[in-house]
Image (cartoon, rainbow, N blue to C red; front, side, top):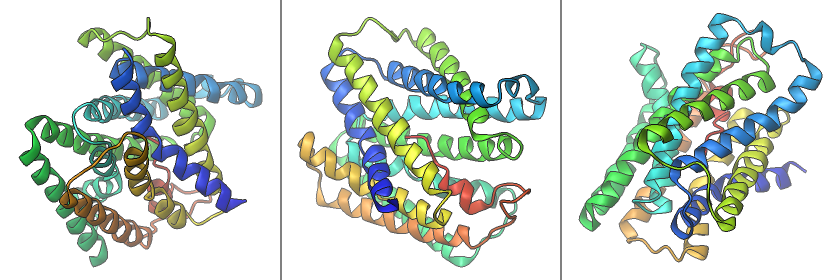
Length: 310
């Protein structure tokens, strides 16, 4: 059963980039509309069972919980804006690999706070960002537009790392249902404000556009991340983290099959470097478990595993 769930989870999250690229390329749907409806629908889906089980929980959210949730939702909104826009400028494979640098950014943020890691983490970071240099270097030779897309994807990965860390703080005392409902709901509001400021429409699309939005939400959000959240209860967070990394080759494969995306060999070399570097870094971070999951704050490996963005 776990194998089937893992396969469904990888297929779900890996389909995110190709589905977004296909929807943006073939319909009038705007980048921020995808982010808005995905989070709005996600908030509604998560709110329903939460309101049934604990109807008074939302009224008891503390100021500290709200502040961390607000920071997480703002970071998530900017993450989606960067990542989805990057898919209009660069390849699906490159954008997915660069945005998946989230665990590496978490390690960098923790290093900046004075937290020390084992040497494998530093080696993994070096490998991962070596892959970034390889991808951006080849894209610079292709077009400046692709380079801008690469940089937006890198920024999206950093924002996803901030979202994960802030969410980890909020979830020290909040249930998953309460946190995700609050975070996704506020994220939708932030995205709506961004759409108003940039004059991107959130509605008025053709049927194919709405179908694309629905497919992205169901495959990536409801199937992909729901599967991984379930696996976290039955498998080691380290194993789940490693499985999630299969999103990188998965997205590249789906883009090659369905979007006929062909890339220079050097970019595929960069993808491999990022994948290997993240695997080494995640493994090294997971060994530095600072607290147990029973009664204490989430361990580093569980925070890394609960990525839940793309």
